[in-house]
Length: 222
Image (cartoon, rainbow, N blue to C red; front, side, top):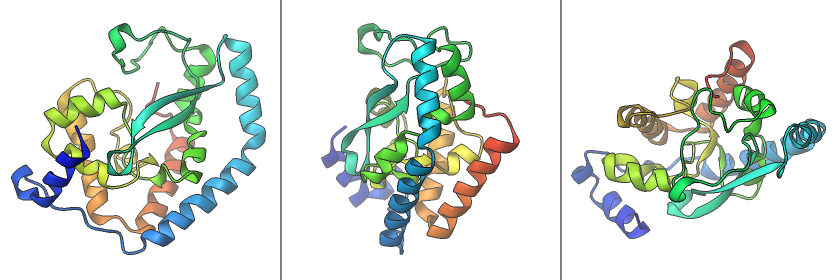
């Protein structure tokens, strides 16, 4: 999917059964809050980063960080960073397979990191670089974007905002594996709901709920 197609869809949203994107009134303040909080988080969490990096190195061979191209604002690709949770492996025929429960590729340390979402912390760097926001639609692998752009008409609207570390979909139970198109449709519906009604106050609420859910109950990620 190219950006020209996205612009066409936005120019005639009724053809796709959706509403045009609503710009956030305090976008500048949102961006500033994102960068300041992410920078503070990187400094405060530096000791934890060192502990996690050491555990990954001891547990399995390979790099500490995993990076993969994802789609960002205005359909621009960027490199997303995570702590590596899988053993180094080659994707069959270039196909990016979603992680599944009891996936044999996941390491012992990786399973803990995924369960607690600690593997996502390096994305604070993506936020500081302006490639991501603290709150927004979660970015998917480029291959999955191409697939679901064909399967879900309103999918392209998620590229109208910066992807996030967390989002409305993630605190609403729509995270992790999406084995069916219906599962992804539910996630996209929540993403679009967020895009249409997003405010700085809503972002702060989603961040607070994310922290609460991670502390109070076991994560659904694996």
